[in-house]
Length: 273
Image (cartoon, rainbow, N blue to C red):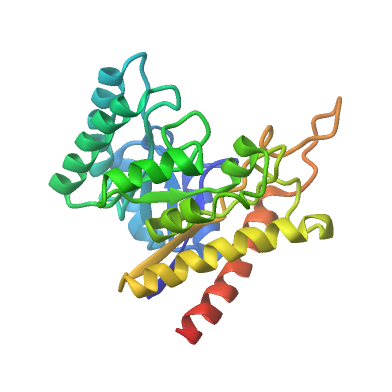
């Protein structure tokens, strides 16, 4: 199974060519971001070929009603397909919907995924349908073909815990993970200020334990690749100093450090399998 390290455009400065060159030179093989932020197909696709980078579009469903979200999902998936994606990441639905509405949304989402033949991974994100381990696990039990983009940093924040009471639900979520947003969170926030700092070592280890289990699950499933995006974000995800608003860590350095660290652990897990 091949590891594909992915870098988000989130928080990066410079022109699109500059960003893609920097990403490629750092060893990433794919980029991730919303189509609206990367320019036209005519602008983006030649750069993809020049820097030999694959693309994972990110879509965020929006609207006041379930029908609005479904219509937006259809439109944004169709738009994403124009960019020849490796797979698609979706921030899907709303946390406030009752389960019956969630079922309607994901029934159609799975039909669309089957029709286009491109994996769609629904992110475990605050304010979305998969905002907790138990709501996500309920959907995964209802839909055996449903898969996720695991970003458990949100769950530590939403649940204000290290999820020690969620063993069964986490096991199911890990088994259905096809893409990872490798950010380290804690009980009071979805992003530690700097994962390299020793005071966060226990939280890094906790997330790495989950990520390694996801790798093992994909190996057992016979997957061709495993995608990992060290998706730490800029302010105000990244804490800043008061008054001057200076970030407390260098975002690019944090993302590269996390990617390189995960690559080493991925190799170790793969070698033992």
